[in-house]
Image 1 (cartoon, helix red, strand yellow):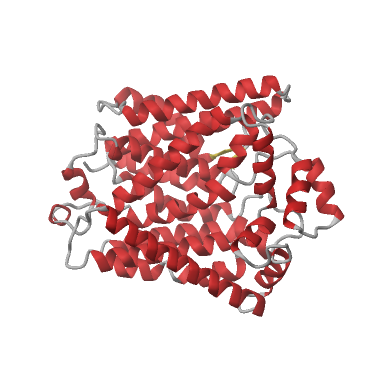
Image 2 (image 1 turned 45 degrees about the vertical axis):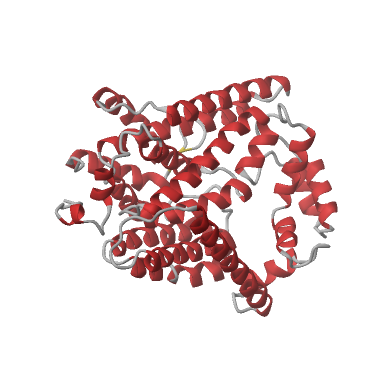
Length: 439
């Protein structure tokens, strides 16, 4: 079903707002505000049943998440402002997920307009002040990640979507170009996401040559694919430990490599993670000490940070020690952060989400369609964040998007589980050729 012009424009605006922050009560993106404004209308006009087993589990576990936040913060006698911030996470994810599910049942192709809106939105976000940049930081790593990387990410997704209409290989090759820019100026996680996306799209081209639309996900096939992916990651790691210390990836990455390879684990993957993500190790220690109810929303875990540094044998400055004991944070890992913040009952949702996200990725690889390049990239980006990055405003959108996809496509009672819906989304199907998809 084609999206109406009004729906297309509104979804475009929602995509446009992904990098624009609105400080009403706490931190929300303009995208989320627009979503919440549209929900009453979408609910009143919806004629398709979206409530199925996946939806029941998702929203039920989000409700449990809310209860866990309330109980955890009461037990830990937390400040009200941090309680509200903790409560906002599951509520925002739930509302965002509902929006995406309602948009998908009206027209899955409307999501193309969401992604198209991201690029001008990222350009507009360049001119908005960032809470993560101080004065005089108009260059360097923080500037690139806050201002340039969103433009690179959205541009890569939009052009990847356009190229995928004609060739899986072209789209895969395109995702290699941002690798060089992000590897020098941005994050290693971003570099890995682009590389893995290029590899996955190229792998799809190799496996689905000759216009095949479907791929049977047998156990031998998945084990073979996982093995190839593991070999690829090993090669990426080998290239990194060769190039970074020699300055091939720039001075910033060279400095970071030497700083993070001084632990007792050296330049091994464990050593780079232990030094580069000391806050994750600290969060894991805090969760092990407080497994049931956690420490409350946005706690200070300075003592655990010191312990994590000692375990790694890392040499850090006095300033970082002092900062660790004054900073309250939700954690540098979505999964581990949720655990030490609000306990094991809040964690159940993320374990469930991890399963449906992987299922969704496999499902859409077997029946790839117009949205595949964007979903593949966001899968890798989000998979890293689940373990090694905090839940930011963008993360809430991607989590909700995958939840909406699971409700509509993956559940066997989902409203879009039929073959024709997939055929109309696949640029390699005969049904698609008869449709003016973006018209």
